[in-house]
Image 1 (cartoon, protein in one colour):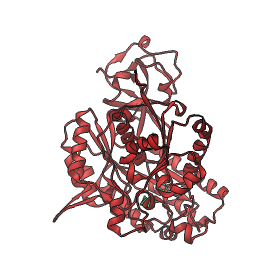
Image 2: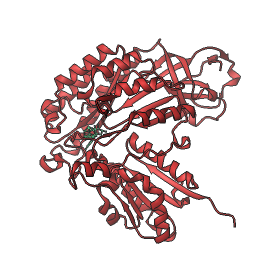
Image 3: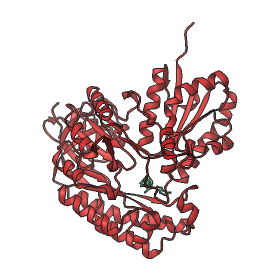
Image 4: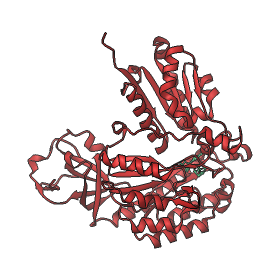
Length: 490
Ligand code: 5AD
Ligand code: SF4
């Protein structure tokens, strides 16, 4: 009898860690014969890889689960799973609000997904796989219950075959008072550097050119081999020696752990991307104290100054939370002042969202109204956008090296296989769009910057010329097409 291919759908929300986890889950299930589909209702296994950082992300998942209620009733053989942070944090609530969910698998148990899918199919009984809560046992016991999920990689699920996330650390021990991550991802654990280097080698042999090392506080990475300790700087130096790897990025940094050895490595090693994401969260010391961020605005400023001095030209970006408990107008104005002065490449700004189980939710009132949060978010963004535009304008006329990632949003609507609008990033993580042939995707090339907006640089790729008839004149582009467009000769 001809066996129908088993199909799998996965929706991912949240951070880079989740994107990587989803890639690995899909890889594991593909090895069991599953094929990825892009329509949940066409899948034998439907998975949601979830995020708990803000309430909004959770509500989106509950809505999506609600929409599948009838489908599950009508298709009793389908397996529906909730994975990741929400699963770890709200195991019972997930099943209470969505009783048609068949499996609930926490961040530290993802290796068990293929086995649990089979178990649901065999027994139709709900399956749970969760790690211990932070207070549910001794430190070693809790730590051991969160297993790093590092199965073989599967290029098919990556956003591009030449870029990959590489996990170097799991969990977080900082316990910022607003944050749910130490609960959902468990204690901080660094992966053995030999395993990380081996994974990067494997990725390079498959054509991967850019690795992004990920960890919740990636620059706190440390692995002790008896007397000797491997730091992030040592790891970057080892990955730097791998032929084929062209770029090494790392996210997200904790301000207090931005040590000189790391900054020196970023400066000295040509493959290290000259970009640091170092969230400050607030420009007010009292707020930082209530957040338990372990640094002051003054020491953050010192870190910014030191980073820029040690790594000339480095681009730095940040995260902010507006409307945190007790954030007065005056306190907020301090964040405005910091954004104005700090010249971040960009900032991600979030409205405070109280998270049950966190210190802030237990001890402080969520006393800034939604309207005020919204206004502060917009105000902060407006200042950041002015700075981003100024930074981008100062780059007009420059020649930059771009790793081409693929079609831009405009390019996606243009026919494939010819010249269309492409997008890529510079060594300082700036986004550049330009017109070029699809064969350039995955290549590094030189682009002259000609125009700027707050979010994007617009440029012309260097070398060689293409006659206008090679261009797809029918397609609309945001960049006006000149009669002669320069293109690289590859
Ligand atoms: N509410 C709003 N934003 C939050 N973040 C983390 N926890 C919360 C919360 N409870 C933001 C921080 C962090 C980013 C990933 O998400 O700015 O850096
Ligand atoms: Fe959350 Fe703070 Fe850890 Fe970042 S450092 S994951 S904000 S607890």
